[in-house]
Amino acid sequence: MSDELSRKSIKKEQKKREKERKRVEKAYAKEHPLNITVVSPETREEMRLTRKGRYQLGSDGKLTPQGKSKRLTYRYNLTIIFLIVLIIATYAYFFLVN
Image 1 (tube, one colour):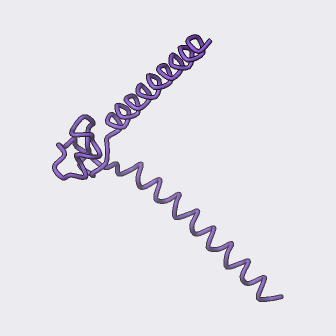
Image 2 (tube, one colour; image 1 turned 90 degrees about the vertical axis):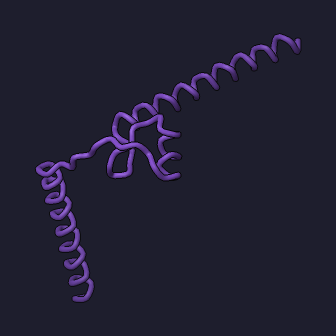
């Protein structure tokens, strides 16, 4: 029984330390923001990520917020166009079959 209590107390302490560590890391990140500059893609992986340079790539190797927004806009537009074509094809099928 004492083993169970000690295990529970150890787990509680670990969770408490983890929670405190995350809080401190967030505070540090707010105080010391990273300066990310826009760079041009050089490697094959970067070219694939930016779709041959269409979206902005940051110096950290990830898309910038503006690049992510452009990519998401592109994906939404493609989805909408696909759905419109699918709706038109469905209506055409039902009207031409009858």
